[in-house]
Image (cartoon, rainbow over all chains, first blue to last red; front, side, top):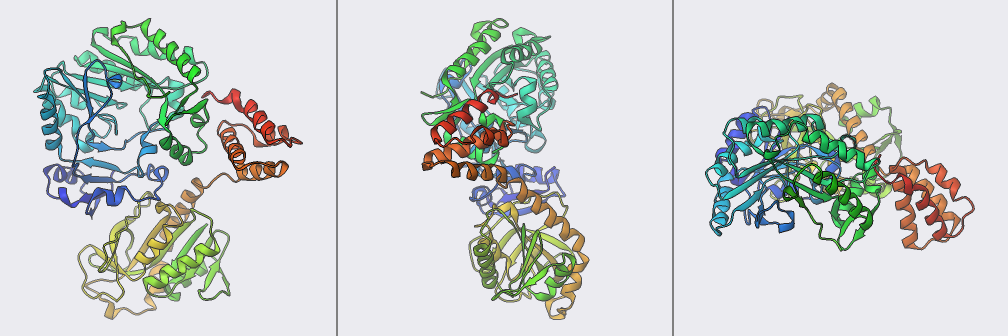
Length: 332
Length: 268
């Protein structure tokens, strides 16, 4: 899967690096002085790189945790995200990563010990629980075979009950969840769109049915799970498709294991959107009923409200209201 | 379209034969052409390489064409005749480093490559040596996205068989021996270049409609956006042209197109 690894000189001898290099003995390893030397140059094609991304091993320095607005949380007051990995194995056409980064290479920050220290420092700042979201700039589990992220962080959070972890994923990989007993301060959150939307926009992603099955299996094992209905995508036959989606997710799911459902319409910083449109000019999703509102491109206001209201009502027919969270977009 | 930049006539001759390229009598650089390939002989050295690329960029300014520097090189580890692609290009005495993104599934060995102004006799392990790649890459990646700019080298000398033993006529044979693999590279780069090329039909329709009325810059841009969106939504652009036949008011034309494609805007 990985046949070219760029190695930042600062992590040449890091144990995490050596472990990964052991896993890919046939890969060519090229040195770089800093990951940005490979990742940042202008004039790269995200689209072409997505066909065969390389792996960059690097050290994340500076600020390791980033605050996120309360409206993006799932019940916590103190919310942070952190990124052990930039970019994703999957290729979802609505994803902001393709508008945000100049390159589709995977940048893996191997200095887990620094992330864990930062999480501990932040956790002791307050008596309230602190939430840490790991799946913003990547899928939390999809590249587990490369990063060993969950294997290292799940036991870490288990030992720190005031620190809550959200693993957000479209992966069916349950491996790292099977090696440890479930604990309350972790939520395995699965992102979903209706099967018809998924087939048109979520490339390289496991089929919806397989992901729903993995989510239920995780719940049966005792893990708290979440649904992330974000982005909500305007489509034909909207109400029926979303109703069928929620029915399929509910079927055989022990409701007490459903921690939260979050809901947010498709929205994108306009700079990212412009780049995405340039990268995939033939993409029907980008020719939807969208408008620029402030610094964001989103569905036309009325349409957005209508679509969110339909989803909200469908969800509330199935789950108690305290489990539903709306990701309000910061648009006018 | 792909541009091949070769330093020596001896390296170029097998390619000229294989692709049946016809020479154009241009100065200062010998240029050989066919339908989908241009080959230019630069001479030795990175300054000449850069100048040659600049010449092609000026004569054929279309963005995102393929660019391939092909030739022989020394190598500290690889055996004679082995072809490799440069994954990291350095230059003796300079900080600037390039990392051509490796996006092609072609099973070619990847290596570092140092471009030098003088022939190199001390070989470092795992390092290739040439005299053009850095100048070539720097100039070419201003004209195309970096994935379309690649450097392929075939090992002509190494510590066991140093440069002093090399006979120039061997260059032709080394290229010939790798022709099949070179051909796959050319094909892959061309396909990638095609994939990101703007749709010609949109531009053609746009130009034709622009001739029908006097568009401001803003409305002209809006027209292009609507045509692109229409095509993305699966609308036949000839239907749009038909719809706009004899419409000479830009505002009305835009409104008609919007009305026509509106019902298709929800994802299928």
